[in-house]
Amino acid sequence: MASAPQNPAAGGALRVADLPGRGRGLVAARSVREGEVLLSEPALLLYPSTLASLRAYCAACFRALPAAAVPCASCRAANFCSPACAAAAHPRVLCAALSHGGGAGLAAAAPTEALQEPLLFLLAAYSLPDPALRAVLSLSSAPPPPPGAQDAAGLHAAVAALAPPHVLPAGFSPDLTAALLAKDRGNSFAIMEPYRPGMSLELLKARAYAVYPRASLLNHDCLPNACHFDYPDRPGPGNTDIVVRALHDISEGREVCISYFAANWRYADRQRRLLEDYGFRCECDRCQVESQWKDDEDNNGDDGDDAMEEEEEGGDGGDDGMEEEGDGDADGDDDFPHAYFFVRYLCDSEGCWGMLAPLPPSPNGELSHVFECNLCGKLRKEEDAMPDEGTSGMVH
Image (cartoon, rainbow, N blue to C red; front, side):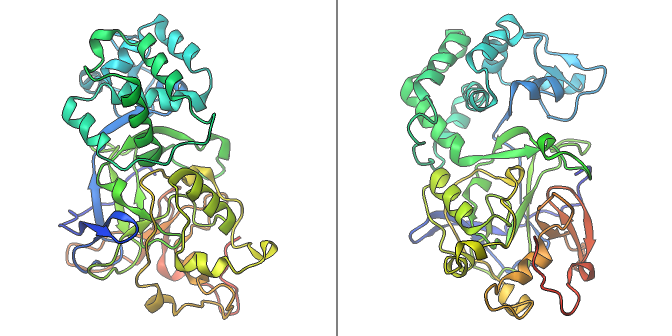
């Protein structure tokens, strides 16, 4: 998305609540209107997704690098888009690790992108001042990965080999490394390369990952009532902030939920990912309906798009306002009573599958009736979202 709409202050729209059987979550502190900004939060921790990301994006703000990039004066392996970003610098432990042969040591320690992401996370996390590091450690932990999926001991050894002892915190230990990795798996959001029409899905990757403590409290629902936006290329400060907007009206006290991945994923794929990555099975209204389908009928979308995947604290919640808006069944098909949701809130741009949220209301409270995709940035008028009479309203 090239630019962001004007976002009014969230105005205390959310509060933290202990939810029976699901732990902490965020609920509406007051009645919320569609399109309202519920949360706008800067990153507590920000780090590149891969070593290739360091070569393509500013190491401080993760905008695309200009031709005249400013190299890091210390490591010479990272670059900045401007003198201002160079002055802001990038994580000091990561910078020290990159100083080894211009990043050759880090590349040797993590030759694949799958290994680079957790190692870059650790190098950035160990760069945090103590209060911020404690804030990361206070977040919920993801379930242990499957055997062989992540070598915490090997990653700890890599950090110890790459970073000089004097730049590491006093509590540096294998146990602390393992605890931090559990926070990464459950709380990091991807800052995506903005989608462009005709763009190959192979190019639609994360520029960076970020941890937002308050946004990490948002639980999952397969029919969410909110979605998050990032605007990495917008000018000015705050381009890596996360912005969460309401899809539709939410009543006071109702839990606010997002989807952790593209909403068109099949039931079996959703359940598998939620169980493996977040340690729970979803029992939202949509899952209860789709769990009764035969496998060959589970066709409300394709296999999904990993580009829309979001990682943060697990849990599931409910949607609000959908009963009133869609009256359940948009097309008379009792087998899929939530089809209205897909017609109204799922982007129909080819290959996108992002979520559509209304733009924020005007300062005088007037609703915009224009929807924005949180992946490709497409704007669509509300009347264009409604299917013609006689169509199924299903998104394939």
